[in-house]
Amino acid sequence: MLRPRKAIERLQDYHPPQEGRAEFVRLDFNENTVGCSPAVVQSLRRVISRGWLASYPEYQESRATLARHFGVAPAETIMTNGVDDAIKLICDTFVEPGEGLVIPSPTFAMYQFFQTVSGGEVRLVRYDEKMGLPPERVIAAINRKTRWVALANPNNPTGTLIPKSGIKKILEARPEALIFIDEAYFDFSNQTVLPWIRKYPNLLVGRTFSKAFGLAGLRTGFLFGNSRLIELLRRAHAVFAVNSMALAAGVEAIKHMRYVDRYAKMIVKNRESFSKALGRRGIAHLPSAANFILARMGARAPLIARRLRQAGILVRDWNHDPQLRKYLRITIGTKTQMSRLAVELKRLEHLIETQSGESPWQDLASGSPAEHFP
Image (cartoon, rainbow, N blue to C red; front, side, top):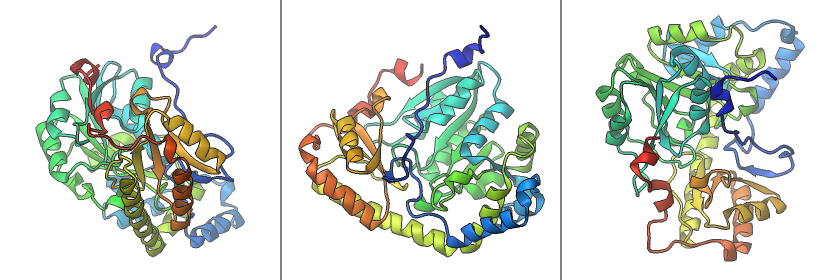
């Protein structure tokens, strides 16, 4: 029997969305719960009617149009098949076996996944008990083997935001390390360091159309950096990584930013309302700058998730992760969707552990140094 590389043998399973989600209220994977602009749907019909599906995609004009939207040059932009592809591309371009990645814990699983596939090592940095990420902890974790640092901002699954001052400290303290700021949830936080790519040669910024734009099914992502970094990444990238449908949808979507902005503002408003409702019930949850909230439901969190599923509502159950077993991540949807969820949570409140006097984030923030830096 053929054996894979040792890095693949060590790889842990990723837990993607369950199949058959179409008939549910999908508050589990941070998607747009309304859908993309109708004009984008029309643009996809035009792609099909013109026979473009039989042709390989052409990138030059689309790249220039999308770069203008983001306020950067085409040479500072690379389009990717979602942010997952962007993360893989960073590893393919820069990571040698044995070289290191520094990430917070918990964070988006794909950073560690692709780093491990590449044969690299991972060092974890814990949040503090207030679920802040002191830049000094990140800086201290970077050593001579560190090739890159990945910081989702806002972070997934916590929804927390690193201040720009903290990112600046990390960039300037460790110019030898590549710093990747993943801004997948930018449309809900409105904090960005994208203009800094011309100031810091070790900075890469990621964006996606999978969240506020409602195009998760088409997998359109972006990496931004100085032209030298982008040229290196382009050398390692698949020639036709982004398909024609995704290109057409992306170019059309940016023509209708009022639609995207209106959706994002609605989600922020509903996020704040839902956060207050959780607070009134004594349910511990983190202040979020994204389109979701991480709530501490207690030891029966997996049971609560199953009961919600039986009621037709999906939330993200983290039972496979020892660090997050007591938590549910809840995507913020429309007012109607959140009202339906609130009704079901009311019915299940006898299962929910409300906030006690101790820090509700102790299990997320605690751990020995050995756990911080395995």
